[in-house]
Length: 487
Image 1 (tube, rainbow, N blue to C red):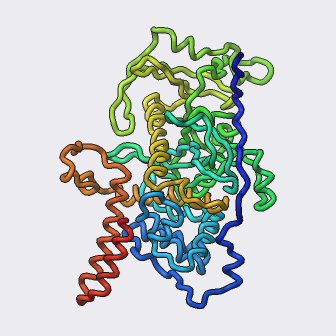
Image 2 (image 1 turned 90 degrees about the horizontal axis):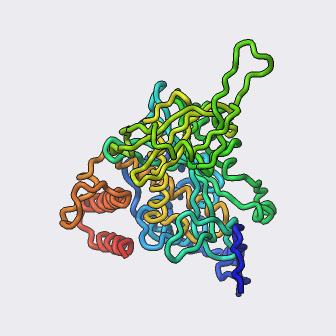
Image 3 (image 1 turned 120 degrees about the vertical axis):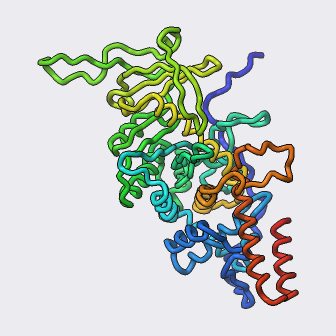
């Protein structure tokens, strides 16, 4: 019997019906108020350093009646371990009987995620503004998170970009379009600091969300354009006169996004498909009647140009803090996606494979183009760390605004930890004296940075109690809290 050919279309989600209603009914709690309800005013272990200042500035942008809960949530997320659900955030933050208010707080953060990130952008501008002769490097990419259950709003089947041995080509969950600022650390190379993300919802799910939230369908390029416009407008409003270089992979190299970014005054650097439609540069004669030609007559084949053995040149460029060698070819071409001329760079790897990249700025050097493309990989590292270390997607919230808040809070935590440890050396970030098998010169990981901050938080809390008179009851209570955090 002949096997049926697999379809390239994504499968449809299959869910069983809910067996019984939830035992946590909010209407029942409101109908029977608890007079002995314990409220939460502060975190059990408060934040310290620059993170405390940033989070305090973020909380001021929220309503005063609920803004004080943001530092509690951030502190709990910083100390949480294991499966980092929203409940584990609240438990480590010391939330009491008013835990339902903190779930509602997540919805408020999700609705105002664009405003909450403003203090983070201001801090990055004040510390890393490249000036009028420099430029900001902005990376765009999307990443999915696995979810489970029929009542998770806006969740559906998405393409799995990194399937493992036991995974398939598709996964059920959310898909996030993320914008990150790529900065070069003097010791550790390129680091991507996520600023803001948008949730991509498939068109088949829009009707369900439109009934409750008046949701409008946006494609991934449209979401990416909205993110870039918001960040560019914020930086320009702060007084930045630097240029902007937006880099992304070939999936976002569409005319709808590229031409809009060029109109915003940004330079686009992206990867090209091997079968991309490129044309040569037209030759317009003086005195020729009619409009000058925008595209050449001859089609350029990237595969044929890369297949020729002659014309390759050697180059040494900085690849995320390390000097790398390669071979390249470069030439000018015209593209209908861009709407004009571009500089094309063909890069041959050591394995013999090749890749094509373009820049909408034809005066940009090959070295800068290759360095920008290699720095884009920092956003992929961010996706790995934000899921592995901060547990993005594990918060077990069903409301769409709560899901948006949890993902953006995980991204903010990643950025704040990197900024807190930016000026520290490797010896200050991690002590490997108790690990003789480890390489002493290995680059500190994001987990090392997070661990250092959490230790400083707990250490500061303990030292604040030691200078007081001996109080066995208080020290015992503090020990029990720390023991609960450790387990």
